[in-house]
Every structure is written in structure tokens, then in C-alpha cells.
Amino acid sequence: MHHPALFEPLQAGALTLPNRIVMAPLTRARTVQGHIPNALMAEHYAQRASGGLLIAEATMVMEGNCSFIAEPGIYSEAQVEGWRLVTSAVHARGGRIFLQLWHGGRACHPLLNDGATPVAPSPIPITNDEIHTPQGKFPYATPRELTDEEIPGIVEGFRKAAENAKAAGFDGVEVHGANGYLIDEFLRDGANHRTGPYGGPVENRARFLLEVLDAVIGVWGGDQVGLRISPLNSYNSMIDSDPVGLVSFLATELDRRGLAYLHVMRGDFFQQQSGDVLTPIRERFRGTLIANMGYTAAEAAADIAMGKIDAVAFGVPYLANPDLPERFAQDAALNAPDPATFYGGGAEGYTDYPTLAEAKSHLAS
Image (cartoon, rainbow, N blue to C red; front, side, top):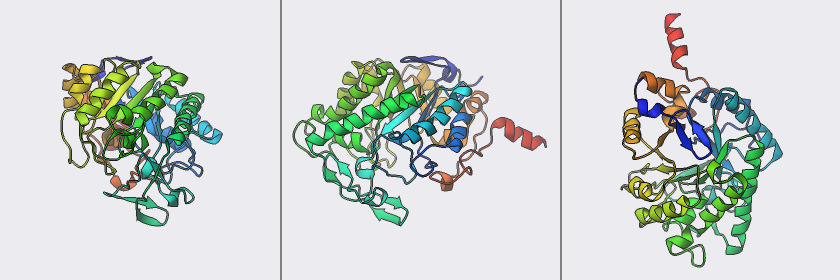
């Protein structure tokens, strides 16, 4: 077997993972009307069940916060039933799956939400990209600043979504605190210019995240709750003046909560910010540390063997290779992904990537 460190079992909170290869949450926009998961999505996730843990895509905790046209929700009974198809299919293949709980914040748009203005910690729009809508691409809207009095209602939305995820049969949940969506917007000072209890020093900027986590932990227990952060990523016009200080504070707070894991995007999609955020986290957070962004199997195995991290989440490689763990074990070539099919569509570029066994069978025929 190649890369043996990737195939050692791992205790991540309440779950025993058979390997350390995690499927990162990947928005694929395949739901049916009403943001309802379906049988096609169940097939997609079940195909990938050999990973140590699957983290399902960003899922709306509350109605009216759409950012991707056909992303899933977890706020209606129909959505819970749809997700039950997914969890049942994954469990039938022996897999484990968490649901990523998400609020899009300023990345939402009125054209996707019946004219509603998006909300954010401060009225600062995304400027480094445009949003796809049924009417075409448009600039992001300037969000409305949330009042302090509105924030408990959103915390309650996360709590209720956590309950719905449990009803849908998930093994746990991951709170989405990354990539310039609402929680991340509060965390980083480039997007949070407010004063009061949720703005200013890092202790205040982290307050919303910690309130959400505590509410979700109240449903699941800390050992079945994960968190994803991206302290360096400039996606969605994000930046922070002190990312190391931010993660150092967060790691200490998170360590007290007994999380199943902390999932860290180690870099920046656009390479505007750089630095080492994993080391200060490792020094302060004693739980399971999952790293993400740009890892090869060899680098992942080496860093795990050295104790720098405990597992690695793979995104695009897992998108195109449903049997990614098997390919890593055999040091086999990987399927090339098709970016044209990443967001939306049907089975093409979603459930039709061949496994090694299928590819060999095709060659032999």
C-alpha cells in the first residue's frame, strides 16, 4: 500500500474514521426545486463513501439565503426527507457523513431571494467577483448591516438546522465559518467594521461564531460538531489584518468545546495572503485537525506522519475520483475534473466519473 499514514484509523470526536482521507464540502448545485436533495445526489455521495468522512456541501440553514441557485437547504421537511436519501445511501455503503451548515451572508443576492437584500456584519459588498443568477451575471449587492437584535434569530436558525440534520440521519454537522460567508464575515476585520458586542477586537468578532457553535453543540454534543475556517483565503473579497492572531484566539476557544474536529483551509485561492496558520492552531487546539487546500497524497501522508495534522480534506480530486482512497492506496492516476460541470446540471461530471475498476474493465473490453 502506498501512503500508509493516510490509511491509519482516526478517532475524530465520537466517530472512528477508517482512514484519514476526507471529502471536502463541494457545492455542486444539483438540487430540485425548493432546494431539495434528490436521488442523484444520493448516488454521488454514496459513490464516495470509502473516504474516512464525507462532508456534504454548504447547506442553507434558513430560507431566503440563496447564493448558488440550486444549492440545498435543511429548513423544510421536504429537504430533510431529501437528505435522508443521501445519508441512507452513504450508510448502506459503510460511510460516514456530516452536513455543512451555512448562511451565505453578503454572498446572497436579491435576484435569488425574491428581492431580499442580503445581510452582513457591515454594509460592505463583495467586489472581486460577480454572482450567477437566472438572469445572468451581476455585481454583488451591498448588504444590509444586521442589528445586534437580529443575530439571536440567526443563531436559532443554525440550532434548528442542526436538529433537522439529526432528523435526516447525518453523523454530525460542520459549521461553515469559511470563504467569506456570514460567519467568516463576522470573524475577519476586512468585512466586519461594526462596533458593539459583535465588532472591533477579535473577542467580539468571534462572538457570533461561538454562539452558533454553542447552539449546535447543544443539539449534537461537541464530539459530533466540526468547524471549517479559512483565515487566509481572499475569496469573496475577504482579508484580515492579523490572521495568526485570529486563529490563535479561535483555537484556544475551540479547544474548550471538545469539537469533533477543526477543518482549516491553509491558504488563499488568489494568493493575496500567505503565512502559516496551522502551526499556531496545532499549538493551542488539542482535537482532531483536518487541513485542506492543494495537498497531494504524498504531502498529506508526510504531514500526518510528522504529526502536523491528523487528516486531509480533498476537494477537486474527490470531485473527479469517486474512489479516491483506492487510487491513493495504489498510487494510481487520477481522473481529470471537468470545470464546465462543477455547478449545476445532471449526471454528467457528477456521477459519471469512472472508478479504477470501471476504467480497467473498459480497457479490457
